Amino acid sequence: MKFVSMLISQTKNRKLTKMNPKITTKQTTTIALAIAATVLALLLITSNSQLLKEIRKESLAAYGIEPENTVHAALPINKFGANNTSTNKIFWINTVHLDGLANIHGDPVAMHPPEKYPNSTLPVGGGFVLTPPDKTGAWKFRSFTFDPSMIVVHQGDRVTLHFVGVQGARHIISVEGIGTFALARGQIHTVTFMANHPGTINYYCHIHMPNMDGQILVLPATT
Image: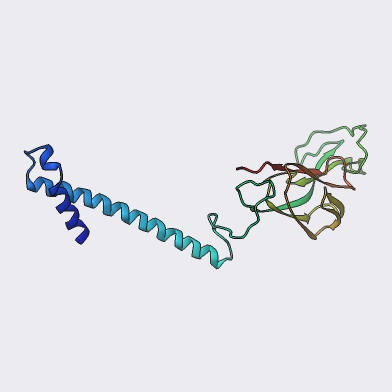
């Protein structure tokens, strides 16, 4: 109320009556009240917005999650001199395979028409497997891959990759410049590194080439 009274007093003493002598004191007071109400509304909105931010911050903290706008102190600046600080980037990469199921006689239940077994020459490396028809005429084509197979980060980011063995009994995986490790179904192997240089970093399975591979695209740091 003290703020409103001060605003009314200042409005009366300024240029409203000078600009238009016909404006009465009552009209001046009404205008001042409208201005004060607008300012108070804006203050209330700002206060509520800040309150919501604090509530959200406390809720995330309860689950051990940092809000997106958290300022990370003491994170290293990349050696190329860019102004941006490093950011933690975490990815989960699944080993998966795709199966194309077919039958030389067709499958009336799945409503698949008869499909002739192909006489295909597959690339060497184990990434593709073509299984000939069994006694029922069913045959299969399998392709191994990573999900995701493309990751984008920025120079200076701290990158964490969690490789998850979902499909495929065994994999031997390399991350270029980082290392090589074995991964079995149900296992998780984690690698962490700093993306210091722009360019691409390849990751691939030695057992399931040429298609079970992926790339990490490191974009130049923003200034």
